[in-house]
Image (cartoon, rainbow, N blue to C red; front, side, top):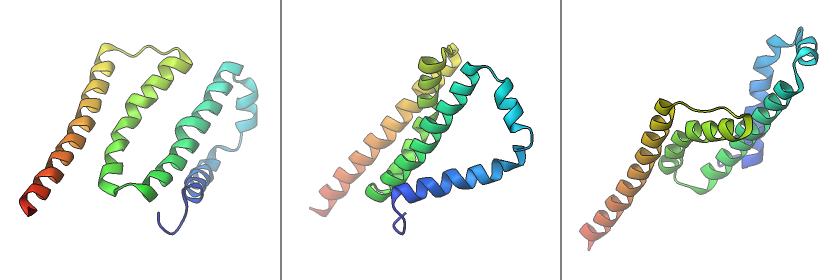
Length: 127
C-alpha cells in the first residue's frame, strides 16, 4: 500500500477481477439485453458502490491507518451490504440476519474499545 496510492490499488483490484470474469464474455451482451432494467441498474450499482468505491476506500485507509485497526473494519462489510440492499433494492433482512449484524457491530466496537484500554494500560505501565 505504500508503493501505490489508493486510486492505483483500487484500479488494479477492479481490473484484475474484471479480467478473471471475462470467461463469461460469450453471451454477455444477449444476457444484458434480455435482463429487465431494474436488474441492469442493480448490477451497475453493485459494481460502483460496494466494489469500486470500497477498493478505493480500502487503499486510502491502508495508507493512513494502522493495519490491525483497518482490518477490523472489514467485519463491517456484511452489515453495510445488508443496509444497501435493504435501502436500494427493497430487500427485507430476516431477524437472524439482523441479529448477526448486531453481533458484528458489537464485536467491532468491543475490539476497538479493548485496544484503547490496552494502549492506556501500556502508557500507565511505562510511567
